[in-house]
Image (cartoon, rainbow, N blue to C red; front, top):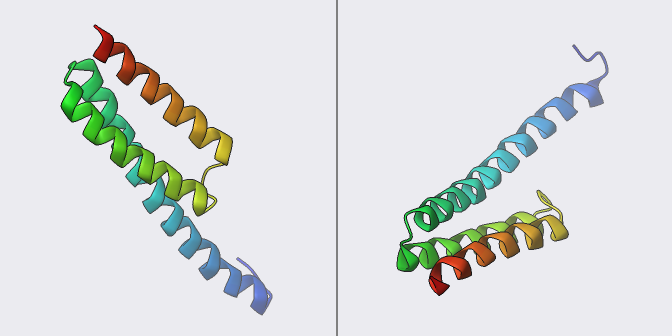
Length: 89
C-alpha cells in the first residue's frame, strides 16, 4: 500500500485510466473479431460493414494513445487485405 498522499491519489488516477483503456480496447477488439468472423463466413457485405466499424474504433484507439499509429495501420491493412481477398474470389 502506498504511504504518501500523492501515491494514494495516483492509485485512483491509474485505475480510472485502466478502465478507460479497457473500454477502448474492448470496442476495437470486438469489432476486429466480428470482421474476421464475417470474412471467414465469406459474407462480403457484413464484413465490409464491420470493417468500417473496426477502422473507426482503431482510429479512436490511436487518437486516445491506447495503440500506436503504426500498429493501427498494420491492423487495418491486414483486415483490408483479407477483405479484398474474399471479394476477389
